[in-house]
Amino acid sequence: MHKIIYGVIFLKRSEVLERLGFTVPDIKKKRVLILSDIACEADDQFALVHHLLTPSEDIVGIVACNFERRHRAYQSEQPPTSMDKSYAEGKLLLELMGIDDVPILKGAPDAVLDPNNLPVSEGSDFIIKEAMRDCDSPLYIAIQGAVTDLTVAYLTEPKIAEKIEAAIWIGGRPYPNGGGGHESNLQKDIYSANVLFESSVNVWQVPVNAYATAYLSLSELMTKVRSRGEIGKYIVDRMLGVNEKYGQMTIRIPFPHGEVWSIGDQPTITVLLQSESGSKFHMEHAPHINDDLTYTPNPNGKLIRVYDSLDQRLTMDDFFAKLELCYRNK
Image 1 (cartoon, one colour):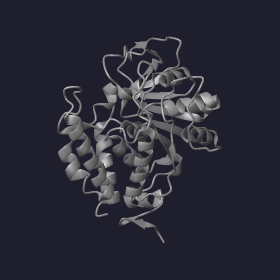
Image 2: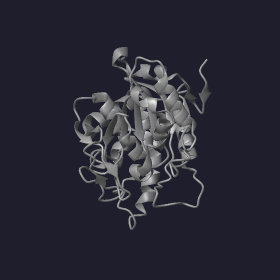
Image 3: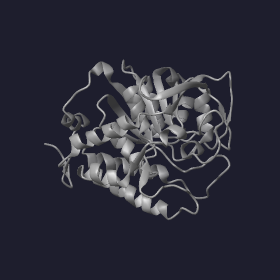
């Protein structure tokens, strides 16, 4: 007997995916661990839902990340609370999707502010456990926010670098120079980003010039997402609310634009769907990242994959279709 709460029937993720009407050969599946600051804005929820509806991904867990927006040049006197908000938001999304078998873990409550006193989190412990688990399926870490939890896991157990196929990170300014303005995911923890770049972990970076090109209009969301079950209604209504709230702050920030929104976290799905084809990337020696978000070249640094453009049609049409198949009339 399936559990039912507020009219939502709770199923295993595999049972929800049966509604798609197709399967993916096991040999083509990728083991995916998601790190997300789920409650930060309004596109984080879209990306998490999309990951969970993608059958080529074996989602082994979700780490709820903080979004304190701190780096070494800024300190807040308020105690950190954002990770708990992300954790609660992630639990709610799973409930609204009717999925009851994907674990969600609490990440670090704050950035790495003192390298000699790393934040403790069950999320970092889970990353180590999953990376070191004996498994033939390649492990990908999809990072939609700061890289804090992966960096803490790496500093705790460097051997995980050998076990991770790729860490896909949405963050950073454009190459070759970086800098030139705000970029939230990097600003949240510059120290951890530098550690990741200097580590032996294989990195696929999607900087702002690539991820910020994924736009949706609010009218598209009303017609293609909002009517798709409780989950569709919730993520659209939340976006409308955040859009209204942020829209009153245009004196301080130019974002959002009014009736379109950049779905910037979705590229972690795009690059996993296509891997070597479709989206364009080049290889860079990992630079050192300065406090002003500029890059200092490091010709001796490891090579990382940097995405220049993404297949946005594939991304959004795939998202709309999966919602339609899994949650129409639900």
